[in-house]
Length: 379
Ligand code: OGA
Ligand code: NI
Image 1 (tube, rainbow, N blue to C red):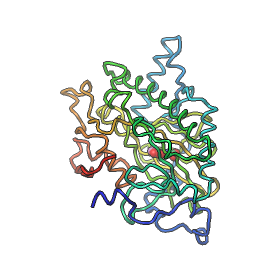
Image 2: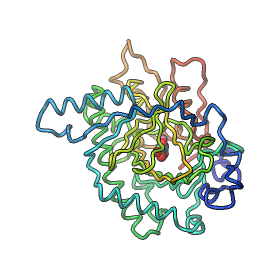
Image 3: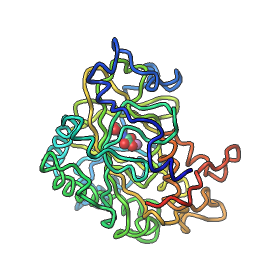
Image 4: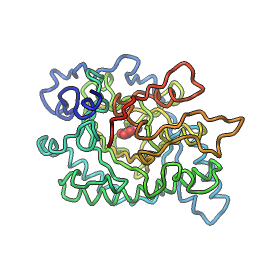
């Protein structure tokens, strides 16, 4: 039964791009499935436009001046504690490559539907062209399509599943992944130092070791929406994995980060990358660092494309608070869970705020653990 759910979608898949482009929408009214309940809608009065998430110049980490290195590390530590989100500049990823990879994915989404359908995905692995997260029949849907691919470990990388058009797509994804992966390595080191772990690679080791780690890329495509005040491009969620490196659309804002009761709209800086911490960093850091809820709003004027690179623990790695961060005064806040088990929640239920990591939190006695038990599931 569970296996069946994961092997196929519970109902026919509708491409949001198709709804947006064609007569799928009558009189500019979006289908009910995409209409959020009033409390989830992006009310402009709940958004704060005057503040932005922190911006960190990564060059400072490699400065000849010790004071600059320390200041930069402290900025990153503060951003990890207080925000769970920051933008980085001088991040080491080639700007020209970023431009090309963004362009190639825009072109992919412009291809005729039949061409993209060749890559239609299933919930078994999510790899390929998709239009929903979660497999619950009748669930509320988000205003986006995406392409999801496995980048690491190498045993899961299969470029023949990546688009063959545009012709440069596979090569560019390979290069982009390599450079963003290096950036993740640098961030993992600095976070290990900032958390006071014993070795620079302790965080990477907690995730299963640099050569075994997982990484995947989701290219999000948010078509124009005739009723943007009723819909979301991506519902509120925290990312289940380790760290996410997001390359947002430089021309069209859409990403919002929760700050208390407000949503902050991230103002994209040209060729900057957005770093956000996922639930596994919250767990390993025993709550010192927090994954933070975010969502995407859409608009009626412009489509939006973003690239999210997810850097994750090895699937079968048991993730738990680092020994070094567990003391008598600071008992473990989260029980050990493998990452494969953990991520099933998102794969089954779709984006649901921070409900999963919060339900695991051992100090939170009002909720029960709701991670689906899917021992049959392999990927
Ligand atoms: C995600 C995500 C934000 C965006 O893919 O998990 O949060 O701006 N994306 O597309
Ligand atoms: Ni996200």
